[in-house]
Image (cartoon, rainbow, N blue to C red; front, top):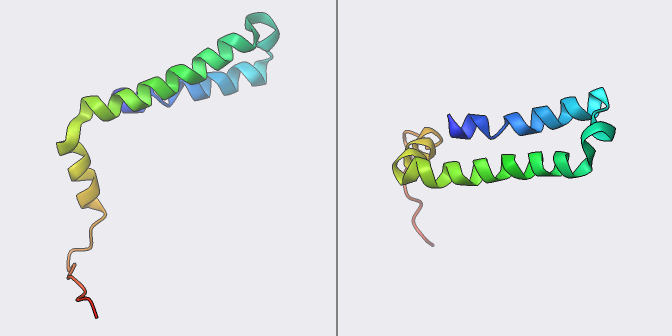
Length: 71
């Protein structure tokens, strides 16, 4: 959930730019929103742990993977 929630601040920033809320809230609020998204993303790495990332890595392994001998 935290990993998915880290994407939300970027969409909120895009909406704020599209609707012209920059004048109302200022650039500092938008930059803070983007930093929040980055912090949530990095925090999710630590919370999810190594077992989760091992499973994700295993999704991209070829089933018939063999070692190539060195020449």
